[in-house]
Length: 446
Image (cartoon, rainbow, N blue to C red):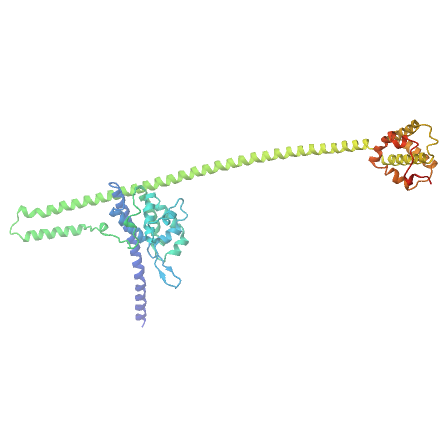
């Protein structure tokens, strides 16, 4: 029973290891074939321009499409079914952060309708822009988006992804020329990889020696005697072996030359990126210094403006205070006191009342009346305000009692208008004609 249990466990382990082994082999095959296709593209570019008719490019595009579509998740529909999707859906989301990207241009192309065709157009545009490696590196750095679009075991989620980004960097040295309206963008058929250019059988030295022994044996058994003609195949075999060795050495030399060119291109790219970063850093530092200087100058200007405004405000306040004081002094000197106005008005009322009650008999002349009026005007002066007040009180004590009819006759003599009209009494016809009769019943003495 124990042996049966162990056998069942080993069988289950073998069943689990088979899919993982197959996935690993598939990833390794695609990466190896991609490396071969990149090398063949570099070799072909030395002799001719790479375009849509080049079989090396068509094979490379098919390999890259297979790599980006490896274990790509389907899209879940409303009914719960999973529909297949193209790698363009992943590239469109993951490569948005690339500066000056061509995503929007691919989306707006009129002759490209399907998602697969847009992905193939993107490969061609990225190669012509020499930014394919940058696109792939940016997409692989967005690990969250990559996990959302791919299943476990995909090439873009494994260690092979870093090799892929570095491998595509050598294509930046090639000038591509594509037509984005050709049949290569047809998204109705999947891409097929041609493995025959990369399949090559290399015979080992032991196998070569065994073949030579067989040829000698067959040559000796087929003839009765040993003749010089029978020794021909071994010499021919040795010549072929030397030729094969030279071919292998030549292939190794070309491989080393390609790797050298790739490394030189990589170093040159890194140096350009470093120089750009240094220049950008210098520009940023210069900009920060300019901004600091401008900020200091603006601060100094604002402080100067504030001090100047404060000085102007102080001057305006002083001028306003001085104007108020001058206006108050002018008004005080111009207008007499209210007490003097009241006393003078009462004195004039009393004088008029007494003149009319005595029927102008005791009046000696009109000049005396004018003198009295002049005396009343003189009393309006602020220097004689106290004397005019005393004279008005004496006149009130000597005359009759005030009656309300005087108010209707003389009006309000306390107002400024009545005060200014006092000077007109000197030429009044009413005061100058003592024989004029009073028609108003309010003027009749009581």
